[in-house]
Image (cartoon, rainbow, N blue to C red; front, side, top):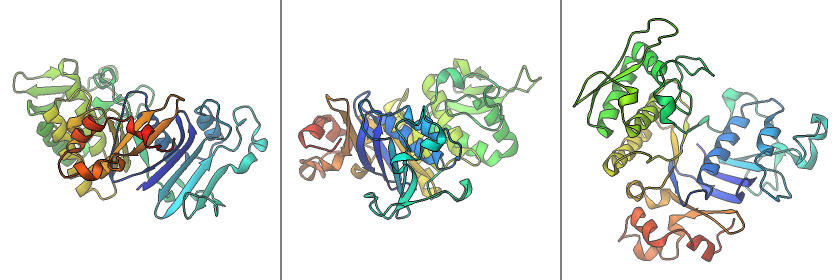
Amino acid sequence: MLNQVTIRNFKSLRDVTVDLERFTVFVGPNASGKSSILQAMDLLCRLIRVTDLNRDNELGQYLSRGAKQQVELIGVSGGQAYRYRVRSTLAVAAPYHLSHLNGGGWSVSSDLSATDAKPWTPESAESCPLPDSVVLRLEASRLVQPGPDPVKPDSTVMSPDGAGLHSALASMALNDPDSWQALQTDLRRIIPSIRRLRHTKAVNIFQPPSLLFDTVGADSLSAAQISEGTLLVLGLLAALHAHGRPNLILLDDLDRGLHPKAQKELITLLRGLLETNPDLQIIATTHSPYMLDCMETNEVRMTFLKDDGSTLCAPLSSHPDFPKWKDEMTPGEMWSLFGEKWLVEQGVPA
């Protein structure tokens, strides 16, 4: 599990350090850096598993405007800090033998200060100390399409944007019926109007299996006839119940398209999954005070964008009036009362 991340010179994240729980939710205005934090964590966990020389280029394209240092990502797990710094600010243009400048590459240290950092090379993807991750940015337009993802035509895997959902669930129904039934049970908890999921038979490669929904009002509805919120929940559950799912799930806009009661049911369900899967960690963004009301205060992180374009991030519990209100108000009520500008007033580091 990731216990802490530090992100430097990545888009609006000039120098942000965040402590993480097993379930952490980021809340703040649009374009305040919430999604960028998820993206940086995902890049850190993915880059540790690859050895190709393009990873500097991938990170270099996100360099903060006007930054004088390289992009740097640090993840703390198991008491060690694993740092990746782009080897050169010229990494995109420079040949590889010039890109070992400025102490870049992987290093490991006992804390984030990195004063005792030593060069480090992952032995293999299987032995990586940071969790495997995925950022789910599900899109209804992709979730409704039958068949596997045309870009990654593995019929057993749904893509992070939802493409390939129908084929992945058809494979689950055939090869893992217990997970298939558990998924439907969880879906009915959040969306009670869903009675059952079925699949049409595959005719050929041009007519793959597609999902059918039996609801309390009608049977055999296609995915195109189902609400966006229902499809988004189904896509999330498909990822969580999938065989071999990553153990760090990063969820952007967790509340999108959901009724407040369904939002609360979803949080309850996610907590149940965390209890039964000790290797699982969930980090999400939201704009919903109803979801925050289901979180512990220590699980909530606030973001705000300063006038200079840099992101501030701090725990909700660090607000100066938190001791006064912690026993009287829920996290959602605190957010509604405090807002986010207090991060600037309190001088939270950017």
